[in-house]
Image: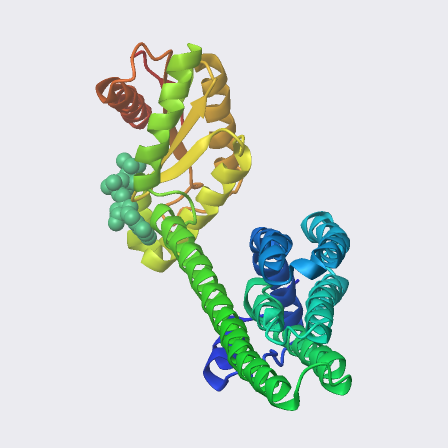
Length: 396
Ligand SMILES: Nc1nc2c(ncn2[C@@H]2O[C@H](COP(=O)(O)OP(=O)(O)OP(=O)(O)O)[C@@H](O)[C@H]2O)c(=O)[nH]1
């Protein structure tokens, strides 16, 4: 499990993370994976263009150093092959630091071939054919999208190879060599500063997106929590009237679609006002909780909908249940509450009355749904009239 908390991300953003590393190891590894997949692998197309430009320079060679055209074609073709292999590896190969090393080596080989062409040209008196290294440095610092340290090391190797091959061999006069070298150093400086800024900016953007996602996630959780709270009756923990209205509609539509029975059971605690008056409201609350729990344990949790309808009244909506099964369930509930053997302060044992109505929905109209509920309520009224602690049903 990830231990990267929102606080950790905020702290890293606020306190900075130079030189281009997150102090938190897990965050650093996660960023490196992200960088490789979303940024470095994305260099595939620009690098393909870069390699084509490198090969296309054969045309420039044919105009500027026609005497070296054969060497140019040979060298550039030889270097293009490992370049292509590297691009294939970049596209399909595993995400390891070897990819960066291979990218750096390929860049250095490209530069070496350019330096060699410059050297041969200089040997033949053509001293201005040495600016290809500038392009190779820019390619390494920008298009290749290398992490800073790889961009830095390949740039150093490229400048050193230029300095060693042209400078040490004294292939060009000192002033021309020095001029080219300083331009190379300047370009390398600007390229590396650009690379650093890109990498730093990417890290900052990454942290901000992590933060945004974390905040989105926590908002979602809050929303779910509020939704849950808004559907639950605080005292009994059962669903409330609001949830009942929303869900009853769905169950009704399903029953209509499948042309199956749906039953409604209205349940009311008998003589509850008297209970409250004699035992106190607090004790009455305890009874409500106990009855709610008993009802909950007696229904099919996966399909039946049990809710507190209001006050001391409960409702159960049972999809795929006909009237005779609903009567058996009502009777079971009545017995279970009675067997709790809660003494009523006015004498006898606490009981419930149950009113039942069932039908196969003919339409999805709200009126028809409400009618079934009303009929169950009338059956409940009958149960009360007939002396309470009973189950009655009525036809819709
Ligand atoms: N303790 C407690 N009492 C409640 C709550 N909600 C409603 N009541 C009480 O439930 C009682 C309902 O009484 P009535 O509707 O007159 O019915 P009854 O006394 O149960 O009589 P019958 O239904 O005819 O058996 C009232 O005294 C309400 O104050 C609640 O959340 N807690």
